[in-house]
Image 1 (cartoon, rainbow, N blue to C red):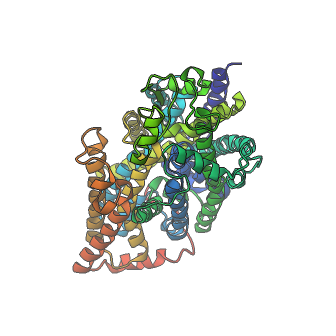
Image 2: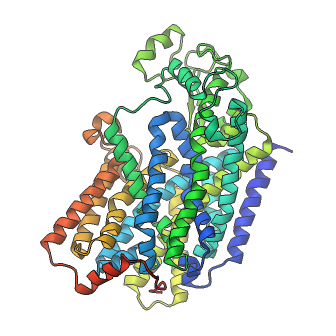
Image 3: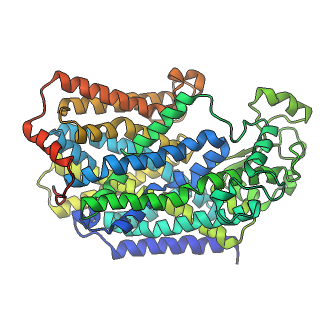
Length: 589
C-alpha cells in the first residue's frame, strides 16, 4: 500500500470519527452550544481542555522552534505550562462560580457596563482570530504534505472539516470531539518519539533519552548536537540567552496570556460545580504533561537527525549530493516548505549559518557561497518519522495527530468568537429579545463567517504557527487577563477604569506588534524591520504583551482611583465570587 493511501486512511478515518461524534452530540439549545449543557465529567473535560490547549503550535511548531533555537526557545514550554497553573489557581474556579457563559459577559456584569462588554468582545475577537491563524497555518502544512495538495488547498479542506463538526455540534459536539482528538494526537506524538529515542539513544522514554548517550558516537546526545551545530556556525544548542529581559518578559507574556485566552477559560463553564472546575484543571495538566515532557526530546532529536542526514559521515565539510538526497526531502520539497538552491554549483547541499560573521572565513575556505537548504520550522515534527525511516503507519498516525491538534484548538477558538458575537454582541446589546432558536442560528452563522476569515488569514500568516500564536497570547495578556484579575480580586476598580485599562493595554500591544510585523499583519506594511536593534529597550513584539498588561493595570487603577467607587452591590458581588463555595447555574440565555 502506498504512503498516500495509508495517510488517507488515518486522516480520513479520524475526520469521519469527528463528524460522527458531532452528529451524535448535536447541540439543540444555546446552553448545549455554548457550554455543552454544563454537565461534562471533569476527567473528560480535562482531556478536552488538553486537546483545546495543545494546538498546532504545541504539536507542530513548538518542537520545531526549540529544534531551531535550542534552549533559547524553551520559553514556549515554560510560559505555556506556567500559565496554565496560573489559570487553574487564580481564574477558573472563580469564573465558574460567577455562572456566566462567556468572558465578555463576566466583564460586562462585573463592571456593570455594556461598553466594558463591547471592549471585551473586541479584545476576545482580536486575540482569538490571531490565534486561529496559527492553527489554520499548521493545518495547511500538514495537509499539504500528507494529502499531497497545495498548502492553500489544505487550508480550505481544514476549514470545511471544522465547519462540519463545530457549526453542528457547538460546545457539546466540540467537547466530545476533542476527547477523541486528544487520544489521536497524544498517540501520534509519543509513538514516533519513542521509536526515534530508541534509535538514537537506546532509551524508550524520550525525556530520559534527551540526557542519554548518542548510540552511534557514544557522546551525550546534547553534547553531540552542540558539536555539530557549532561546526556549522550556529550558536550552541544548549547556549544561554544574551537578552534575559526579553526572555523573562516573553515567558511572562505567555503565562498571563494563557490565563486570558477565552477558548480555554470557557471550558471551565462546562462542568457542574466549582470543585469540578478545579479537578478539570488538574486532569488537564496531567494530560498536557504527557506531550510537554516529550517535546524537548523530539526537538533535539529532530535537529540531530536533520543535520546527520545532510552530513551523514559526521563531517560538516562533506555534505551529501543533492541527487542523493533522501525521499523525505523530495516529498517535502513538493510542498514548498523545503527549498534548495545550489549557490556554488557543486551539486551538494550546504546547510549552515550564513549570517554568522565569525563563520564566513570557514565557509569561504570550504567553497560555500551561502546556505542552500531552507527548512520551514513547522515541518520538523511532521517530518520526523520520515527522517528516521519509521514505518508508513507511523507517518499516517502523525499526519492524523497534527491535524487533530490544529482542528481541536481551531474549533475552540471559533466557538469563543461565535459566542462573543451571538451571545454578547447580538443578544447582549443589539437584540436582547432574540429567541433561543434565533440566537443559535446567529451563533452558527457567525462561526461560519469566522471560519472563512480564519482560512483566508491562514493563507497569509505573519510568521510560523507558534510565533503567530505568541502574538495572540500577547494580546490576551495585555487586554483580557488584567480585567479578569481586577474583576475578581479588586472591589475598587470600576467600569471606567476597566474600559480605559483594556483599551490602553490592547492598543499599546497591537500597535507595537503592527509596527514590526505589518499593519493588520499585511506583509510589507511594517514600519520598522523586525530586528533586535529596532526594538524598544530590546523588547520583542512577541514579548510586549507583558508590558501591555502592566499598562492595563496602571491605567485601570489610576482611572478608578480618580473616579467614583463601584456600587455596593457590585462590591458585594466581588466578595461573594472570591469564596467559591458553590456555583450558580449559567444564566443569561
